Length: 281
Length: 200
Image (cartoon, rainbow over all chains, first blue to last red; front, side, top):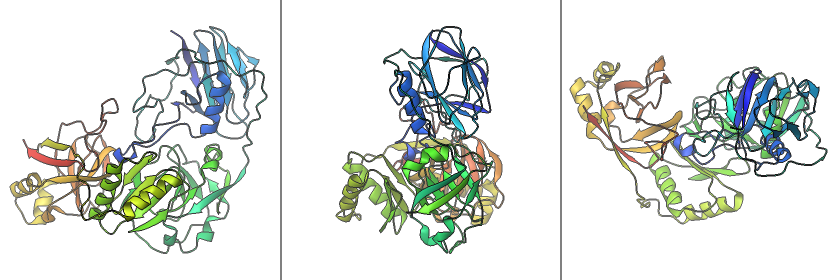
């Protein structure tokens, strides 16, 4: 069996593909790679369809041994990648021979690295996806040392010697948002457009922000209503939460703005301490 | 009804009542418009996820729809066997001024409709709860409610699909599987389905 044997996982290593949209009416979050662009790129480099399942890590630290020859690629922020201790580099297709060990270091900036492997990770999908949803517990358990992850058949040709530039992971992000649906619950929407700090309580469910609390025009809760990835929800304490892929499908706190889709990947890389402005546009 | 902007790829229909929301949901579902990615009902709203041209089609459909007579669709009918041994049955009976037997009679005598979902995969908010059983949530939610617990809160009744924290008043429990990602369909309850409870 073609497989990857997990040796170390770092803080958290999850199997992710592009998620399972279409089940929100049953209470199932979309899930999927938070930095979807990075997973797509890793898959293209490894010669896979863009939606093949790979591994999402938090602050690197993943080490895997290949049981058969394969092509791999690591994307996300720039990060040290080694094969049997020798530097191989991120953002490039890397050939692994059977028995070789690939190790992802700790990125100096950014948060989530993605590993794609030729053939993709081939565990049984649930509701059409191999993504681990940390809110619902759907999808494969977080990877642990000793796990053998099966790989699918190789279908494509790895990328050639293209130079791929890693996206920057800045310490300060200006995130364009559209106001609504419940901006009328805010005393002043301009309160969004200040420097917020990403807190350590952030995870795949949501990015929690700290800063000058938003003043709400109204108190209490709404009747539960649908929630989407990128929704900026304001609980009674006035500190916004930006929902990410494993968000609950309905909620009772007002969503006052929604992050533009083009900025979601950058938010996935915002580590605690990153400064974020929510700029209505 | 009023449409509200929800980012670049969605719109939220604010409804005047739960019935109006249910009618709008049934209308959009029955039309089966290609390109609708998600159709997420809420207690007083309907969230439609689609690219803008598809959102325009949904809007036109609802503008011209007779929501007093929504399409019936083909709701599933689900009957759940319940053991009425819940920790809050006594409290619910006391607050309703009824005997426990009467509470069970009221809860099993009604036909419920799955209005919307959320909280956890497979958790349905069921409407049709008799007025006497409409009671507030617990003042202090339980940290652990077992899977299959049947509870009431406000205008809703529902069943916990898996063990979780929760603040609903518990009437009993069922051994039915509410959600199984390997099953097709994965959830026992989908919006629009009709549900009855049977005391066993």
